[in-house]
Length: 176
Length: 108
Image 1 (tube, rainbow over the protein chains, first blue to last red):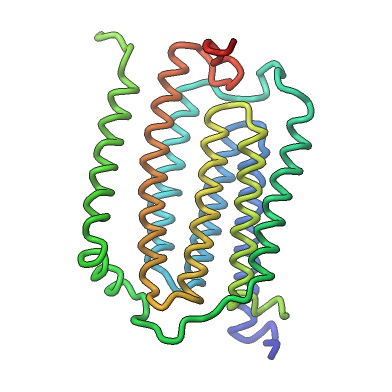
Image 2 (cartoon, rainbow over the protein chains, first blue to last red):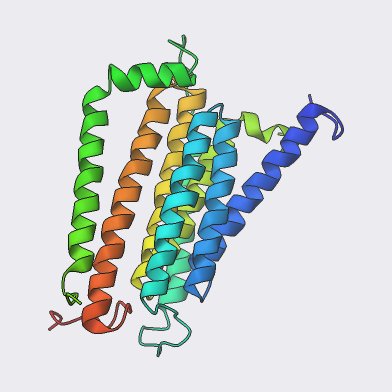
């Protein structure tokens, strides 16, 4: 039952473990780093790890989209905002209560523990039959049939977001 | 329970999703700038996405549903990041600060 390290299964298991490590380390850096630019780098690392997890979940298309959208677009946009606004926490005077850090760790740990315990204690039932295999062709087909309405609506949402962010960000700017 | 076959079990992914959620929640509480809070919110969203993809792979009768939902989460997250960042830029222009404690004009 337990594959040796030198077989293909063993190596893929090792790769999976390192992806999990990359994801969690990136998340911790993103949440704790004092300089925001390091935080963004940790976020990119975490998203790369999550893309690898998606690959292990039989969805290479979603993994590719994760890299394209999150690492390629969202992280770069956040870096632009970091450069436009001076946002380092190191130079700021400390104004918040000293209890926020420990209480935050307590609350976050409690939430994670409760969710994990819920997941581990539940007896999940597998579906008896699978309608399809979840390939890219299947995704495209259901995007254009069952989910065509949501597909159109999401493009409207993105359009409104683009217009809205342009309007918000250029208000108050001088004409010169 | 073998460390090298963990990638084939539903529980692994659910625990990873829960940990991402917890770390993101901690960041959201502890961060003092708007940009840091936005980053933590992205972590929470990706924890939810990992859960959806895990259920999609192991339990769902139609394995396209979770993938499509995750794609929609990504689109919503991108729209949210764009809007939030432009609001942050607008706030920075008015207050010369992105500290959450400085933007308190309506506080009594």
